Length: 118
Image (tube, rainbow, N blue to C red; front, top):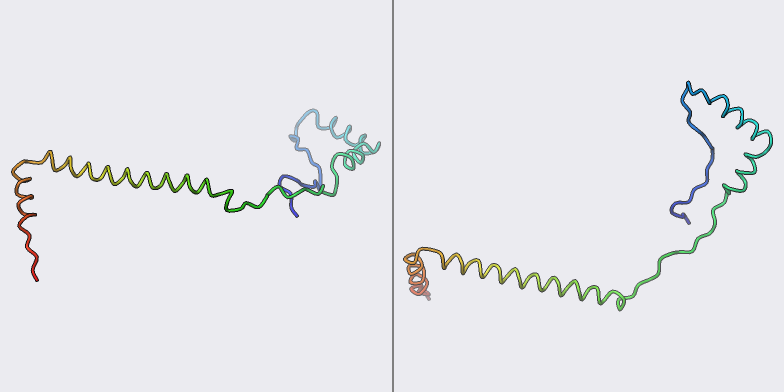
């Protein structure tokens, strides 16, 4: 099982500029630490080769746990649809109200004079 954020280092490296005046000093101290076994102890103690076992952080969720969230989302969706319908109706009423009164009468008359053919 893979653990997020866990890794096993395979090699250790340090980047130093080519003409760094401290490069020889750093290399010398690393060689001394290698000969004395300090690097080996660090690698064994601080960087283990086996990952610790981790418990699964996820739990199963039932429908009863999710139902309140779904209810809130559906109420919000229904409310937004109702507001959309109200806005569309008021917009069409405002457009009819601010039109030329003569064209409004013509539209009303034309709507009343529609005959259904059988």
